Length: 243
Ligand SMILES: Nc1ncnc2c1ncn2[C@@H]1O[C@H](COP(=O)(O)OP(=O)(O)OP(=O)(O)O)[C@@H](O)[C@H]1O
Ligand SMILES: [Mg+2]
Image (tube, rainbow, N blue to C red; front, top):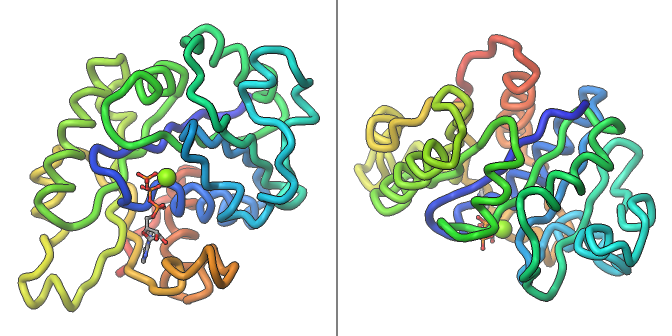
């Protein structure tokens, strides 16, 4: 049975989808099978980041509403990473039971399922939270992001996730900016969010150019190392923070 993660954030645009795509690839390089569920209904993007957008015919709502079977809706990035695209219309009738039913159709075929949640505290993030085993909250190293990550962490606890199952990713970390006092340092972010750290991903321009250059993945060795360390920690290995 797959372990289910929801990847959430308080503030938008902090790097949840980028994280999902890259962690899937990092885990697949360690021999794990990963299903990505694009949970960002109406604003899907993982198909673009994985370069499979032209193959999208169905989405997960089609599976929930029996318009297509579970096999047909999956898109293959490679043998170990597959994607269930998000619906382009908002799924008005979705609820926890139906979404759990969707996950159950895939769970036995994967080691990990990551749900890429929309930002903030809405109906869909709540459904995903109630369907997952663990939650990853992504934040950048600024006050607004840290405060909203803290609020998101509190919400996750209200939605039933145990505190120890909520972990923090600090994304777009820039050591030089921290030294110049332009960004919060790691201790400050952890103190402000009250969330245990899972990993740090450095700022990397190539990730930002991804949708145009088709390099959605960590080409830079620091970023690659960061994702491979995070993947190792997800697998339960003791790996020191890499900066
Ligand atoms: N480590 C990074 N370094 C540089 N740019 C990054 C990094 N991570 C993400 N980005 C860029 O930040 C932007 C937002 O990333 P992304 O779409 O993954 O965020 P998101 O949290 O999923 O957004 P949304 O809340 O809209 O779903 C993108 O342009 C992406 O390429
Ligand atoms: Mg996103």
